Structures are given as C-alpha cells and as structure tokens.
Image (tube, rainbow, N blue to C red):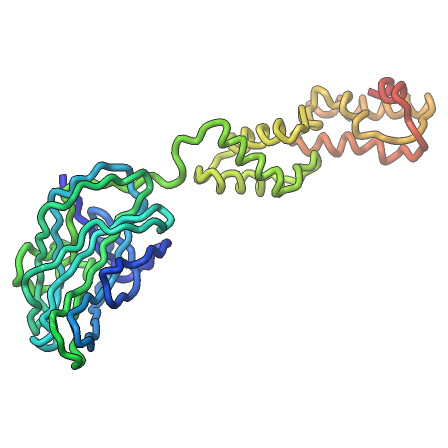
Length: 345
C-alpha cells in the first residue's frame, strides 16, 4: 500500500540533517506529515539562479517524524508541485531527492535523485514527477525519511533567472493531480510505494536493567534522596525518571512504584515512615547523649500516646518524620548508648 506524504510549508522540524551534496544551492528545512495534510497554509518559494553552468537549486528540505522499521522496495516514487520559471531560458525542471537519516538527524544518506523531464511554464502550473522504481532500502526503528525539493536549471547564462515552487497543504479536499496542467492551489504531495508508519513516541523494549540504570543516574543527579525528602523532591524525582524513560504522564501508582524502586536502590531500606515499625525507627532518629530512666518513661508515654492517635488520623509518609522528630523537642541531654536505644525502641 502506498504512503502519501505532505510537505509542511510552515513548521520547522526538531532535527537538522545535512542537505544532499547534489545541490549547488540550498535553503531551509520544514516538517513532513504522513497520510493527512497538515492544513498549515501555503508558501510560494523562489530560487534565484545566476550561475553560468547548469546546477541544482534546493528550495526546501522536508523531514518526517521517526518511523517504524521497514524493508522498503520503493516500487513507486511520485510527486506533484506547482512550479514556474521567470524566463524560458532557465530551462527549469522539478527535482526530488530522497534521503534518510537517524532519529537525531545524523548519518544522512542519499537514496535517489529524481529529475522530471517536463520544463516549468512561465505561469505557475502543476508538475507531476513519476520516478518509477528505486533501489531497495532498509529503515531501522526511528529512522526518518527526507525529501529535498528543488529544481535543475539547465542553462549556461549568468543572467538572474528564478525558478518558483509553491508548497500547499491546506486544501480541504483535493491533492494536485497526476498531470502537468493543474493550476489551482491543491495540496502538494510525494508518494512512496511502500507503507510507512510513524514510530510510537519514547523508547521501546525497556527492560529492568535499563530502568535500574536510569534510576541510578537520577540518584546521582539528586545526590541521594534524603529520608526526609519533601513532596516536591519526590515529584521532581518521579518527573525526571519519567522524562528519561520517555514514558509520558504517570499516575499516582506509577509514582509510588518508582519511588519504592529508588528507595531500594539508594539503600534506604524500609521507609522510616512505616507506621508499623515506627517505634523501631525512633531509635534511628535519636542520636543523643545519656538519658535517665524517668526521661525514658516519659518519652515512651509520649510515643505511646502519639501511636494510639495515629489510626484515627489521615497521614502520609511524612507524618512519620514529625512523630519521630517529636522526642527531640524535649530531649536535650548528652549521649545515649546501645542499651538506651534498645530500651527506647
């Protein structure tokens, strides 16, 4: 099944591959949409030719989004654009160069140079290019397709002539026909014989090791997550991991899972805020000097009172911090030994 591509006359892509070395002059880059015109408008683009030798003049480079992998035979390559020339001496004809590159715009490679055989008219008129079969190509996951559109000026005059190509993607119902006669601003297009599909956003096939590696890198970025980290810290951490994994929006449960994984990797062990083990964790928060028996009793009573009240409260994991810190409010003594800590917990 064929894929029809629509050049976007307005919007700039997020990568900047090199132009083909075939061109003697080049211009700017724009996006390339698949199957449906983008309804962005139209642009009439002039290329000024003053060379005394025949040459290739690039008008626009159109770049697709990352694509799914495919072994493309490109059995048919067609294109239709409105074109004109300022003077018959330009001897201008439509040129479409097909290329590909990696998802980041690197490793750009020529696939085919397709040159029409019908000269431009002085009035802007459709030029339909039927390039026929092209060599087989293999596209890896995430590769982009590039179409570079321009004209070949086959003259030896150094007089200033111009070739014009009009890019249109906003006609509601109609594309330019497979003819050399249309003059209405129907949609410009390029067609390939094989079926291309845009790749899903974000990386695919992430395994556990990759997730761990990402989380560990976040750990370094944050210089280890503090047990008393604020809600903002946790949200920031979750968002950072999400961005690195390319997973898109996450819900509360995703955030909890990520946070628990980070906790395990950072080596924090069970949350100090675990309500069931809160009495055991109190000792970990208290690193204070000696304490008398009376103070131990008073501290234990305060902890018991706080613990008895917890089931009736709506608390989050950070309330545990407040409970564990509360003993510090009335203890200001010197030194506590292991036995004291055991007795306290």
